[in-house]
Amino acid sequence: MDFLTAGDGWFARLWFERGLAGLYAVAFLSALRQFPALLGERGLLPVPEFLRHHRFREAPSLFHWRYGDGWFRVVAGTGLMLAVAMALGAFASSPLGVGTMVWLALYFLYLSIVNVGQAFYRFGWESMILEAGFFAAFLGPTWMEPSMLPSLILRWMLFRVEVGAGLIKLRVGGVWLDRTALYFHHETQPLPNPLSRGFHRLPRWMLRGGVGFSHAVQVAVPFGLFLPQPVAGIAAALIIVHQLLLIVAGNYAWLNWLTVVLAFVALPDGWLAAVTPAAPPAALAPRPLAWEIGLLGVTAGTVWLSIAPGRNLCSKRQRMNFCWNRWHLVNAYGAFGSVTQRRHEIVIEGTRAEVAGDAAAEWLAYEFKGKPGRPDRTPPLVAPYHLRLDWLMWFLPFSVRETPRGIVVMREERWFRALIDKLLEGDRAVSRLLRSDPFSDDPPNFVRARYFHYRFTTPSERRETGAVWKRTCLGDYLPPTRLRSRK
Image 1 (cartoon, rainbow, N blue to C red):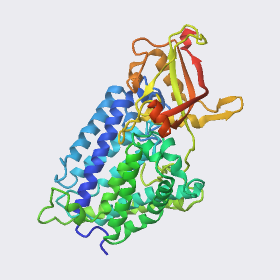
Image 2 (cartoon, rainbow, N blue to C red):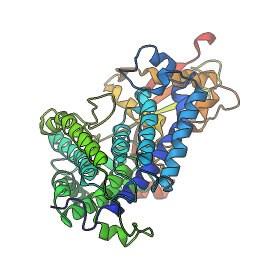
Image 3 (cartoon, one colour):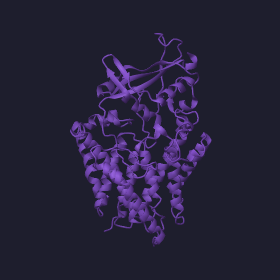
């Protein structure tokens, strides 16, 4: 039985490698632009402090050798250049083993970043891109016959991504079982995009149908990935369509794009050849015996590592986005199982008033690049780029409990308190992570964080006010605060 494609898998390999390399480039670019401010020597969660409490065997990383913001830029910059080169096909026809070494270098460079990234790198797509990059190393160069083994391993990864996401929704139940989840999802997702409000306003029957389509694609369709063509290709195509719908409706960094790229390995060569300007050599070289033995070893290791995530898929206490090993290989994936039905946002404001309680004090808001802030601002399109600070800001309201007397913050995040201190100091590196800083020329005397309920405006409200959001302040998440040195 031929599990590859109607052809030989050459085009599927090409599309997968180029797409994955492009996503690695985005990941390294995101790190270059944000990591020093978030995790650098003077960051919110400094890496040097983390390394003092963790050994290499707990968190493998180049930075155990040394860490400095300059050295970090060398690591991330090298990864970016290698990823761009791979995306352009620079190593596609190089001697056997060269492409493998480049992919493994990309994997380990990014692993070095993820393993010291703490709260800012605890997202499922970090492990996903690492796992995909590791197994891409065994696909082989373009002049050699592709093997079915790496293709099956990558399909198994795609299967876990999709089925994990589907089962967690069914196990959580609630709005997923009664198919009303999309009544809320587009409004309450982490970072809406310009089309999210339109999707939120779709007829209810379409939104209910969308949930049914999601269940079918994520729970039933992935089994077709392991069947002969064209069934595997049809399954992959349905997964791609589903992911493209998620892409146009929200900003989930490279999660959806990576899932699309993974689905390429199951598409028939005949389909991809029709839209690919490149063509395989007239004759592909056979795989050397040593290469075949190596592939068998990788496959055996994958089977062994698959025991835990396989059991997890069958467990009533299913974990999502969970790593069983520090190398981020063969783990559990899955999107958010629960859907919040009300959107809450933390809005940070500052003032130069000498007394925080002064009724005449002018409080000005800091605007983030992706997360909702000003009601009249249309949410931007940022994916596959990952705005890490914006994402963590979305999680903050989950630590708030609303009571008849007001709101109660159950847990304060260390990185958030550090952010407030940086804003009070007028830290330029942190300021560059924001869309606008009203105190860029001179830091404020006080900063506070307010807790708001946000909802999309109705069509009539949009016509009257031009606003995208309607918001209501429910209290202070953080009361007016100043630097300790100023107290």
